[in-house]
Length: 237
Image (cartoon, rainbow, N blue to C red):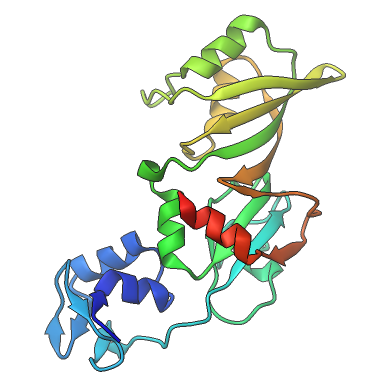
């Protein structure tokens, strides 16, 4: 096997995204043949001794890709300090699986779980521009100005201005309205905060797409493995 960048080797061994593995290297927690590694270092895991926190790295796991419909009330994490269920607990597969594209506990819909750190980085790093699509139920009927403001971008309470997004009305439901929102960024509770600032309280959020991956017919709490074609499509951008 030829030498590869150390962060790629660590990501493939299940230590998180490439960015997370770069942080391990920068923190001086990775050694190759007894020497503290630096960012940009390369190694051959078949012939060289690689340690993280002075422990040999795990053998690369079989790469897994799982689409899950996260129910409301479930935490988008591997473990949780409180009794609430986590997305990891809903997928009874062995080995390491990390959620990509987290959802807040009150939201539901598509979450991708994988041990492919390289793909996780591609899906979460802003420079790759992967879209995320949501169905959002707001408690009122928005007027044209509220929709136009949401589309242009909104200054949040901490002073951050959100990027332009695609917002369109899907249908009405009693006094409320279902919106379809497509966005590239995803700050914590961003949709809920924008809705509150615009006078459109958010009742429900369902994520239906991450990049080219669609929620499809998955039911709440159910999961499935991705097809080879779906994985290829996610890697393509």
